[in-house]
Image: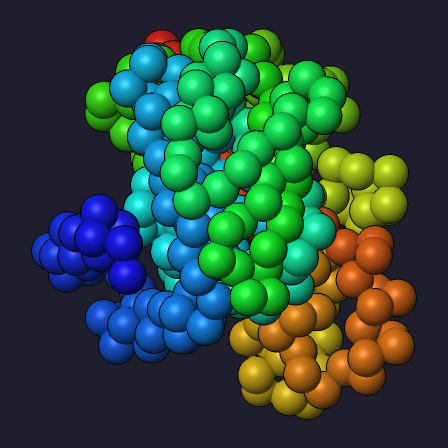
Length: 316
């Protein structure tokens, strides 16, 4: 394995043991790491891709460019969390690795989002790598040949500039703030004017009615704010106010998987975790569901946007 990658993983695991992300156990983290390392070791092309994504994120942060905390399917990889490419711990959020592996295949397009200036950094990184060939076929879209790959030999990486990230430059040094009680009160009262992803009048109305109690609730509301799922809000609100309205699937594992969405099918990751769902039906459901890992990253940005104002709003 690449020595730099191995060193980074070792340092990250030591930090994980110190901080101990509750309620996740060390055994669960180690089991997930083993699963992902087995996938990585099966093909040199996979290792090349992970190292490349790590270098892109590292070089951008060194240039004071903010990298999205969790974008598209990338938060579903624990390796990318440990190497600092994402800031979402997929084990803590119950994000299955197979959402990542089904998206990373020969010919796949890998998304990468960062603040202003990210494209120039990406061009420098890709032009200096010795174990791959990169051709920019259009601005921000790179055809990558992974030299030495067995099954994963060619991918595309799309670098997207998201200028909204520029406002979070302090996170490069200090990291993304967790949701605290004072910030949660702002969300509960719908005091999110100008807050990314939570600023619309409809969303503020939802926040006031729903009174979210956790980061999980905020991610859920973010997921429902979509034409395919907006009609679920009234049923969600009903179940939030009276948990006895949450139906049981008569399957303890399924009930656990659906509990953070109050028994509703909302996330793609839920469909992948529920093995009892027939494949055909699962795919029909999957196409209308929300990418949970992606929305966790988006919600982290909203929390960060409200952080400076958390002590300026007083509940009456």
